[in-house]
Amino acid sequence: MELVKNEEPANNLAHSNIEIVQPDIPRGTIRSALFDFDGTLSLIREGWQDVMIPMMVDILSQYAEQQETEDDLYALVTDFVTQLTGKQTIYQMIRLCEEIEKRGGNPKEPLDYKYQYLDLLWQRIKDRVAGLKSGRLTTEEMLVPGSLQILENLSQRGVTLYLASGTDRPYVLDEAGALGMNKYFGDHIYGAIDDYENYSKAMVIQDIITTHDLHGEEFVGFGDGYVEIENTKEVGGIAVGVATNEKERAGIDQWKRQRLTGAGADLITPDFREQQTLIAYLFGEI
Image (cartoon, rainbow, N blue to C red; front, top):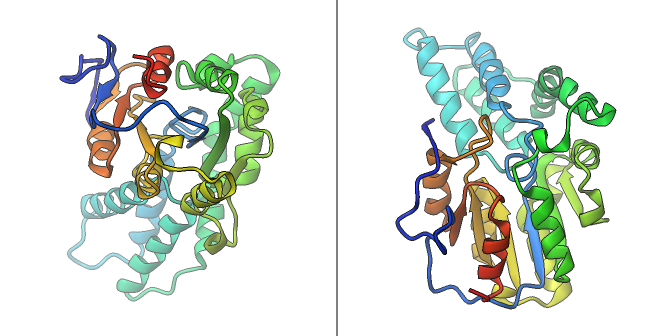
């Protein structure tokens, strides 16, 4: 994955690092906004791929075909984990089960693999969560820069805010609380459930549109994965891709940018440091 520092986009907004991908979108009437959580606002789970991918490679290696090398398995797993990023974690585990079956194995239930992954991930992030709750870590260290500021800005403008994640809801509630952002979303925090067929970001978005009788540009979605971008465009909303370099908390992740523009993002921002400019544009003020 190629990471690059901020480079002024070819179609930048008001000399900022915000790239206008689709210049002709309707603006100025936003009433509701949906945010993805991990990688869009929260950095608590930064590096989760370094947990999931090796776990899956280790499992698949037990069933590998004779000609398959470890590098082959890493390439395979990285591809489908990346492809499914933004969806509920269970879908990556379902794909793992399919790959085991292709090799003649009898996989466990997808939920079993999901719980195994969550246990491993918790070992990586537990000190981050504890550090936030104890005050040893500041919220700024575990947030995409400008996250609280953009939530405050939108709230002050009367926009109803929603949080929807592919991470399990209890974790999202706990981590959003540790980051001090629950107050901006109230009861509008959604996350994965074991009954995965009864939850998706698309369902949340459709419910928002229907409940509030929204039309196109009255809805904006923010995310660093293709799922929320595609789901936002499917209902005619404005899609803002957040191409954050999570490790360094600065600059564009070029791989994310390419993926987000390919999914139909109208705008690309490296983070929310320039949120005032971004919001002014979305409201048609500049």
